Image 1: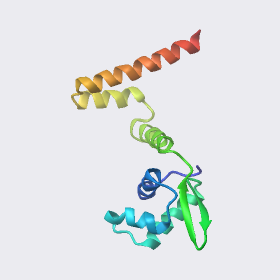
Image 2 (image 1 turned 120 degrees about the vertical axis):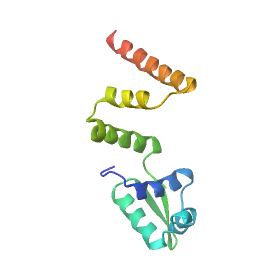
Image 3 (image 1 turned 180 degrees about the vertical axis):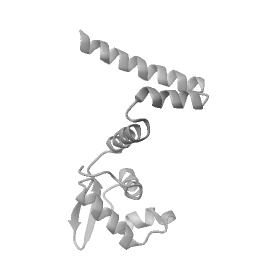
Image 4 (image 1 turned 45 degrees about the horizontal axis):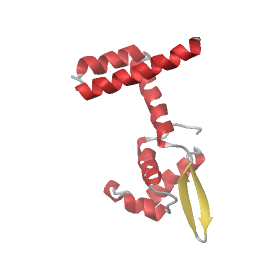
Amino acid sequence: MSNRISESEQRVMEVLWQESPLTSTDVVARLSSQDWNEKTVKTFLNRLVKKQAVAFTRDGRRYLYSPLISQDKVLKQESRGFLNKVFNGDMKALLATFVDDKKLSERELHYLRSLLDQQSDTSDEGEQ
């Protein structure tokens, strides 16, 4: 993927991640709450094709669009961008802000601990 995906483009991607391939008309219908016309959606789809985030195939007179990148990959890129922009890349500051600012539930704490344990296990394997 060559460029960052905008918030509007990400809404289009979310539709394609749920179901694909879809025509631009299908995407417009699924984004009816956005009040975007077909021309707007086609603009977003064309941008996503140029960014190599979406591919299309021709089916007669219509085009069918499918995602080329996973939702997980976009989430990771956005998370890294947020970390760098807001916390200057400092993961400790990010975590401290979330932990200090919000009372975490026992379930959330357990999940966070399990993630940290997995990370610790992975780090230990690399040292051996």
